[in-house]
Image (cartoon, rainbow, N blue to C red):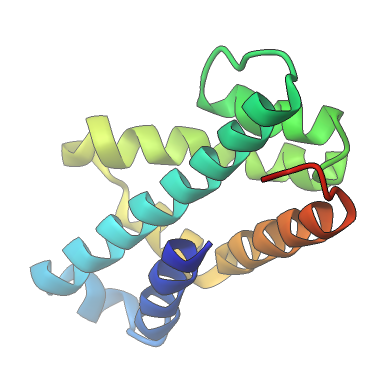
Length: 134
C-alpha cells in the first residue's frame, strides 16, 4: 500500500499540469506513465494476494482479479465494474506504449485518481474486518 500511495502522490502533483505542457514534456509524460503503471500493478498485486490467501478462484487475467474482488464483496460490485478498465490501461502502458492515447492518460490523471484511493480504502476496511489475513 505504501508504494501505491507514493505513486498516487506523484500523480496528484502531475494532475495540476496542463495537458499541452504534459504531452510536450517527455520527462513529465514518462513519470506519469510510469507511476500509473506502478499504481495499477499495486492494485493488481494486492488483489491477487488477497485472492490467493483466501483461496478464491484463480484469476485468468488482470481484469479477472478485479472481477473476483467484486464478486467476493471485497470491493463493491459497481466499483469493481468501473475499476476493471485499469487492467486494459495497464496493458497499453506496458505492451503498447507506442500507442498510448495521451487524452486517455490525461483523463485518468484528472478523473480516475480517486479510484485508486477508494481501492486502498476498501482493501484497508476489508483487512481490518478480516483478522485472518497475514
